[in-house]
Length: 351
Ligand code: KG4
Ligand code: ZN
Image (cartoon, rainbow, N blue to C red; front, side, top):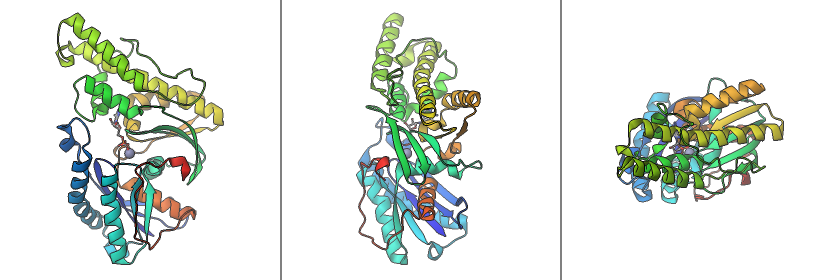
């Protein structure tokens, strides 16, 4: 079965073709991605209307590219999948509209996919796919959740953020440091030369006794710390501080976020008694997080799986993959109903 997948929930347009055969893990034939990050950088964050308009410009050329690279034609596609939510309503509507129009024109069924299920199942696109059951740490720009995953569509929420997501904590702290949007990867880069113990920043809810997160207070602590540093140095903006101080605050911020993610993941493994951890979402690309999780999991005999680095952030491959796996599991059928809707807010555990 050939599944074409379209992702347009935020600021990346992604299209991919996945093939599934019997019960085997589906394989990726081709995927193409266009990131709008440069366009949004001038505004310091994603501008929803501009995102939607740009998805319109990119989605068909990317679809043609995927057809070319996979050596398949549209008539061979069995199911057209798209991200139904959560995300920006206008942006989601572009992918949903194109997918349903394609389905209607081809006489093929369509399937709306949950964006976070895409992230969650993206490690199945790697060379070393996980096996169920596992604990999943979902860390993206909009979500931070720990889930118990017993199979496709069998997701139990263990804990989640009560305010900002981990990616947001990276991005908002990075913004305070004068870094461009999205600041997560840039903050991580700046942190490389820094001392993670230089500044004592809070580890919110670390000892809360549950698996919830809170990151909103961290950016305030970063703001207060940076204001102290500016006053002491007699300069007016962060990037006028000595390079080492900038790197030290970046490293301390990253260390605070990583420590909370690490400790809560370990608690989730203990609580569930599971021996496998899957990390997914944009923040899963963070090297410090990977290094520390790898070390901790090795110590505990826990296997840890990540999506390939280039599939950590949003892409079409994970959407085509999630659709193929849902169909394979028999949980859901693609439908010939093209009256689509989108779900900008849509809890994963409600699936
Ligand atoms: O999953 P994703 O592409 O989009 C959402 O669905 O939200 O995640 C994007 C988030 C952004 O907050 C970005 O700053 C963060 O992932 N991110 C990183 C890194 N790469 C991406 N954060 C820290 N370190 C990185 N290397
Ligand atoms: Zn995402």
